[in-house]
Image (cartoon, rainbow, N blue to C red; front, side, top):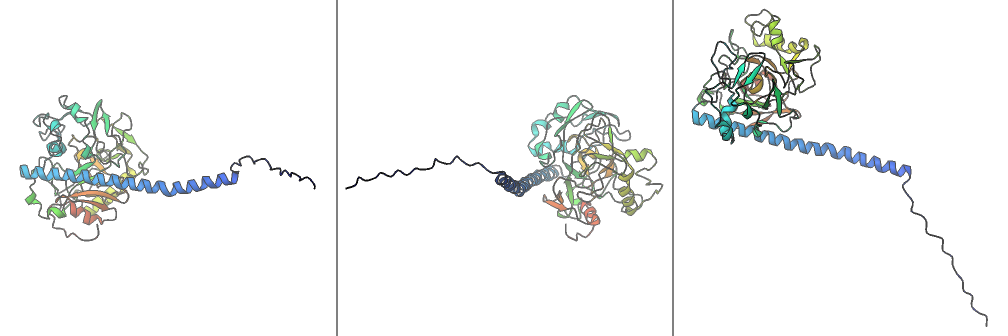
Length: 378
């Protein structure tokens, strides 16, 4: 009998772990890039949707405050004449300051004395009343749109101010009849507010639900310590214009807002043509550090057109920039929301108003008593 043979099978040594090849690595990177390209815009869209909802909620609360003020005082809140005016004795308080008790900010409002001037100075420099200066630097959350990236607090002439995104409308800024100019809120307009106004809800004969009483705006950003910043003619800052176009520059050149190139009785159509070409030749823009406090939305406390007021002359997110001329100007709702800007109607509704709204319809919505038919999609 033969002895059995023991057969030993030799096993190959285990293979070393294999890494990614360059091609595989590039494929993985490409897949990740595609997923990010698909996901990031969606996340950003969701975030912006949330910010827009918060903006609408803030504007709605602002509207409730306006309506509660009207119910308590039997008139809408007025805006005071600025102290720098020589033909009126005003205190310079914005209507936003008067609304603070109605937006859960009574602790600030209780420290105000509306019989005392809010500011002093001239057109070149304005300074706050020392008694109120620290309060003017306090942000009011419901007055801020979360989509606006501009600094909430800015410094002007050595003082800090908290900003404002929600402007109250002083009307259509049109010429209903020869010689009556609704772009100047120092005189009676067709909006719910003008200087020293006491407009009552009963005077809104177009109906509160058919009348825009406030809208959002884009706050200015700082640009140094000079009163203005210069951009080349025909090359304005990028949209949505975080600067306010300085209409005073053409005022001093003889192209006044009253005569419009020598036309003493312009029609709305004349003004349309003039305003459309204004920024194409102008170079002067106000910013958030302007010592004259004429940036857009620089201070919720100041009564100037740039800080607290608007009108309906320009359509939402118009590529024509807002234009301010002392206590007058041509404005429109502006925002960082895609395709819309939010407006507040007199019945408390907040509507994201489309950029495509007809300009005549939009102006009619800012009028309290024009009798315009409310038609079209908006």
